[in-house]
Image (cartoon, rainbow, N blue to C red):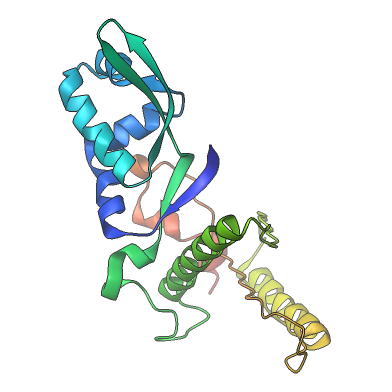
Length: 211
């Protein structure tokens, strides 16, 4: 079972988002059969079987084993991943395109860039799996608190300069044996309250009010 899998078709995305199938995917983090799932969810086994077939058809669950139960064969299934991410490619023509409206200070452009990241890494993961070759990636996830808006602006300026310096040092566009890589950096406020208790003011920090 994979830690995370990317759903890249509209049909598979729809299958994963249907309420009963979404619940089945969550339950199948550990192997189960239609009989055991029917008991847990309080639904008829025939209905569970129908949903399992649809999930299997889209590669969201897989067969673990088959076993005889009286005069029937019981299929034990499990999810193909612990969690799933839906790629923007599943949205077709309405998928965000970060090439439109480039603005490094726009939160919506940040979303478009993040969406492209999901789509491209999902594609690369699929290709590396089919080629049986590892995928070279590097990720940093950090959190920090700024004392003021001026500190945040100063950090952003220094970070941009540091990245530009590193890019200039290591970028080798004329290298015939090299391979292009994409670098993405993002800085945004942390979410400090659950959605049900958040207010519009929660998107503005004391540091922001200094501007």
